[in-house]
Length: 352
Image (tube, rainbow, N blue to C red):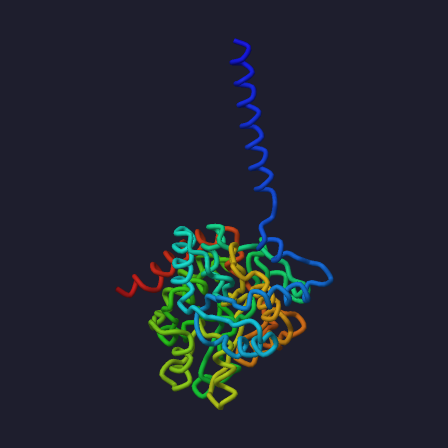
């Protein structure tokens, strides 16, 4: 009997030891976590030395707009070869979730619209990180859990044709859009995220009631991007739209287009964030790249492409607006679904 008790006690101790070892292993930070949060004074040297050994970086991004920054990065760090995998933010989010579930863990970093980073964050694909560059950034541009930081942004507001509508007579607030003189003369972009975030901003600032009243203004819904809609305004086919990006107006007006833009109050930020994958094979190169995109040099390069910066020592006058970083809201997905239903009911279904 005593031997049985001793055997059971031994088994219990072995099991307890195994559990303690497992708990200890789980408590230890992973290699990627350690590198992503390294804050020593020798951080640049550590990242560069590691990146030299790694020699490569796989970046998931949405397009080729980032190429000038990659070219500059590769000139500064010629030992790192950047490979791009391009797809929409939504498709990339689905892709990386499928890859991680299948054990395919090749991606190092992301440069995606922040709404495309929400699901990877929630599914534990993203590694929270630190960077000395955070100190120069608008606090709201850093995701609360440090899973990403916004590196380029633009803002949706009221764009209009200055030949058809003098600046002093144009609507300048969300409430101004209720004036009967604008009924049937306004258009909105039907691109889902643009339209839904516009509605969401008005819900946050003014409540559902303003949105429903605006639905009686007979907006024309164009299944076009904000850029294409701005082109129609420039051509005089549309008078004005409250879903126009300041970056598009700035770029076109500098070339002589009859376009102007107002921030009608707090505006939704259309942003792109940068993030590191939790199991990045090349974490030193990934963090070196993230630091570069966040640097003043990187932010000025983004500005040269027409984007605004959340970096306080690089922001242009056009960035001096009240910003709503909607994806930082704790219940953004649920909020977005509610705003999408409201948008459909008020602006789409009522025209059917």
